[in-house]
Length: 166
Image (cartoon, one colour):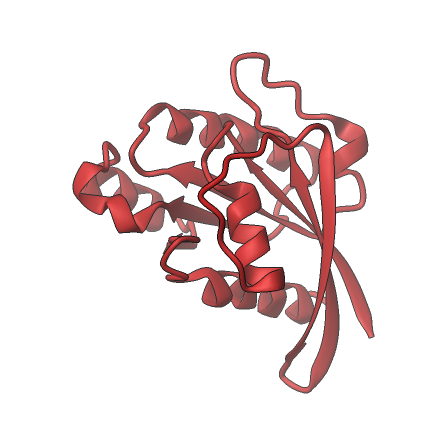
């Protein structure tokens, strides 16, 4: 069985932990709990007859200090950038985090998750911005941990990319 470390990166309160909990345990809670440091979960999946264990590192939100801890991302095989569609500044944070990740390991597979699609009417991120990122080669998924939209599919995309690298 393959074992691959995947990091979940983004600003505070974008829904990183909720996405992981929805994916790993099939649950969603309205209660907001701040992640301190890192929370690690695991889930086994089968991709093209290959069993892979995703070791999911849910990192504390990164904002004004942008102190992406090298020890947390070391050994990563891929990552998610999570953005809260209702807060434009979370996209800026994700772009900065992506730049830092690519400096560490260029070409590492990643997926941008535009979270809180259940609140799409309130989104501050425009379709034009989304289209520009897609045109530059970014894999983008709209997700909602609350409504379970796009969650399973997003993890399948990263798992497939990781199986393809071996």
